[in-house]
Amino acid sequence: MRHIKSLEVDAAIVDLDGTLVDTLDDFRVALNLMLSDLGLAHLEKSVIEPMIGRGSENLIRAVLARVGASDALYQDAWQSYQKHYLSINGQHSAVFDGAVAGLEVLRAHGLRLACLTNKPQAFAAALLEAKGLASYFDVVFGGDAFERKKPDPLPLVKTCEALGTRPARTLMIGDSSNDAAAARAAGCPVVLVTYGYNHGEPVRAVDCDGFLESLALLGQWLGPRR
Image (cartoon, rainbow, N blue to C red; front, side):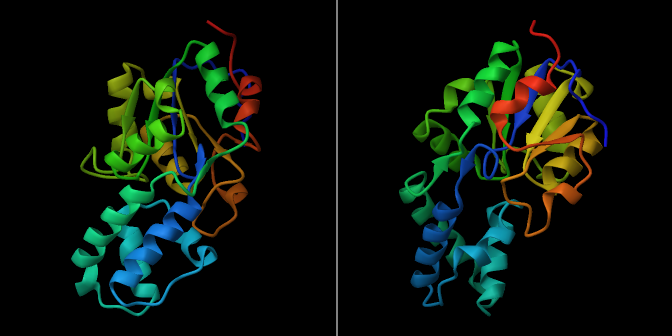
């Protein structure tokens, strides 16, 4: 695995859930309120965690399948989930230790920053505001901002266009194989945090350029300040 300590980049794209904010309990509360509305059994967060990261549509379908419900309930489930998630968004989540320090490091290096998540745009923007993180980002894109979601490279390519940077000089920072696969296909260097959500699989088995135990350590991976 290549070490990118001396890599010089012009911008960084940062994932949200599992990278900046621990949102697992937000998901647990909103999904179980949804399941209550549908008269279905609740799920523990250990069951929910591997389902996170592929967008709300996939999450809801995975939850319905897990409790043995018909996919015909999807539309009702989606409406219920939207209502409940928006009402509790950020109330049961916390910014990861080192996340703010990491964003400060990126800003201190003069990088343009984007937050790119598979979470719906409205959910993402509200969460960043609630957690005091919105001001760090030049642009924010949710999973419904483009025709396809990560791990497709399209969202990264479009985000680079919005930042005015080339993919080869735009660092992707995420927590899962979705982020890494999208970055590889888009031509972006990529590092992954070791504490996030990776669909229930070991993150260190993912093909990427390096791993971070804390975003606060980003400074040692970047080139000289501009």
